[in-house]
Image (cartoon, rainbow, N blue to C red):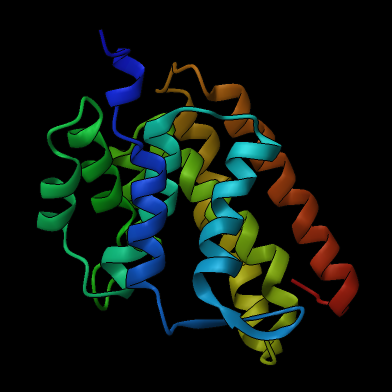
Length: 199
């Protein structure tokens, strides 16, 4: 008799393969110059959740791996539904990827309000890990004014509304969310000191 665990699809590996394929050719500034976007950012967000926050929730980790695919590649929400819709977590993964996708021309403040108003604790986890990784690599960008804008945005559109949002969420990941928020604030201070920013 076959062990059921042997036939369970490896959704995380499937999402890794898919994200790597769709982000192929994209690059991002890192400590070693321009590096593959998937290696630098996608796995960066994934590893923050998996290793630093000790999260093993398949739904969260798959969402982290796919969080930029619809916004930055030709991958569509219909494909996401087709690939993951027949799994237990499929509908939730598709909805979280949708919420994490910024609509063309949408101001970040509007996007953030929409995400916080409609997202679950799992969606917010991925967004915070995404922002934390962006802040960890932001000093490699050459435009100081752009960096100042992103740092300020981290307060006005993410950390400031987060406290009010969390009043309405009583999920298993509240402690992890608070941890990530603290890590973001610490990283903001690190960036400000390193680049001598005045926000």
